[in-house]
Image 1: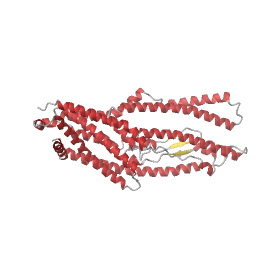
Image 2 (image 1 turned 120 degrees about the vertical axis):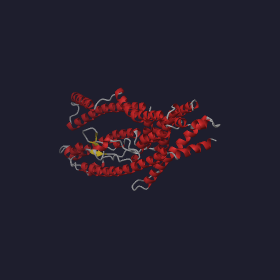
Image 3 (image 1 turned 30 degrees about the vertical axis):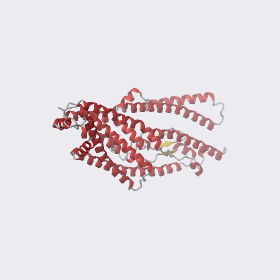
Length: 455
């Protein structure tokens, strides 16, 4: 009996005009998004290759050691291949980073084709499922119960010897399975497109990550479908259910994920860049004065003295930088936890982590940037020692020519890739929350439907 009811519900969904619109719209949007972002990815890779050549030429143009200490080295991360599906924080991780002998790390701007592109959200796969998919899921189900009450079919169904839980479970299962079809077809087409895309190598790791993103997308759409089913079980008019569903969509998808970071900013403020810069100036002046009063008499070589002071200043400034990074991390964690009230935020966190463009990948990248700074400083000190040996008291070491062996000492900037285990562990918590939302909403819809007045 349940199987027959399930088939009837599925066939009713397939012949529904809204279902056809959902199928066509998802397939079309995901296809256009993939084509657009693939073209953008080509441009990002070309810019990356050109930047590598330009950075190398700029470093080699520093003929003297002192010039290299001033110019330093400019590096950047190679664009991630899976950012075609979800940009996430990829733009933040592919900025140019400038390391020099005297200054702190300078971070370039986010790369875009024109400044106009920064005004709009990137319509990638995650964006389409998060915004468009959730809305379509609600519009697909808002009248599943109250609509049948209005046209009298629900009352007719209840005259048959069918348990109410069978009717509700059939509606839910048929709806979720029906949503899986357009999403599955769109993802299959996207996978085939990427497989035959020149220059894009589909690996087993890519396939597993994409499959998990598909499953998380199904859970996410299922949560909004179940929410719409709950609203339909709590109302008696389709127009009322539609208005409530639209309000909940605006609240959960558009409002909460964008509002919570502002709340976190108010609860855990971060010192401004200007305040941090002033504090650094004061700290550097304090260290220099302390060094002049304590260790100046012990170090007779001026070069050695200035290098010692520079290391002490750098250590003090690093403490300030670490304080600010900790405050940023605290604010970011608070914003994420507050945003998890919405399944939309959970989906975005989980999917971007699986695609290596999420918060976890960004945090690992920041740690690598700080670690590379230490490697660069070690190479810089080695270059200075070699320059001193070549000068041998005959002149200033900074006036020595940079040798090819000196350039070879500069470490390559190669951030470690995020393993699948790390990505999965970062996404599991948000996936668990989405599953919890599904269970709670279904139990609420089940309870409401058992008490629903079909008259």
